Length: 183
Image (cartoon, rainbow, N blue to C red; front, side):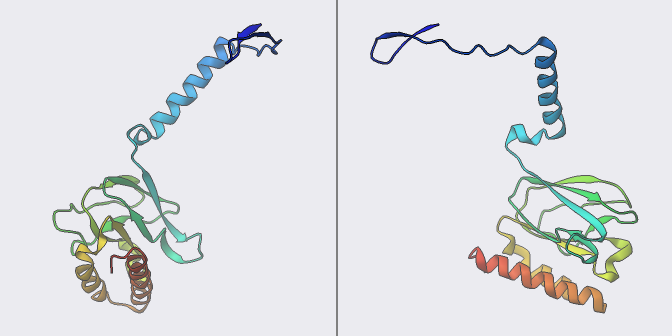
């Protein structure tokens, strides 16, 4: 095979010929790519999908917990709520939503997606296990907009297990806000 060098000189070089992909392999690769886009259509739009799972025992060892329990995202991103174990649901607290945000939730064992377009803090829980502290927080964009209201509503939650978890999680939320210069 011959090719032209940058300086206009012609040189000869024998290149190893690569085997061409068969039609079957080409179609298989095309199918894999199409499948990936079908499973994650937001990849084409540059959007990000996060995952929150409900567990009897979370990967960090916490009992009756969401993983992650606190999730930091940007406005416009989507979260898929999935159940790793039976008997859980997800439901937002009405008094822990930013102004203009829509409440979200699904029944026991139902997987669903929520896109968070409004900046602020969102609190949610598992109805059967709320007293055991099965709660979580989504922090979207400038999440401090309604953080005082979320703190007040969280303080009203009663029970030793949920009180401990609220205290722990809100301390982590405060640390995130300080690290980002929002608090």
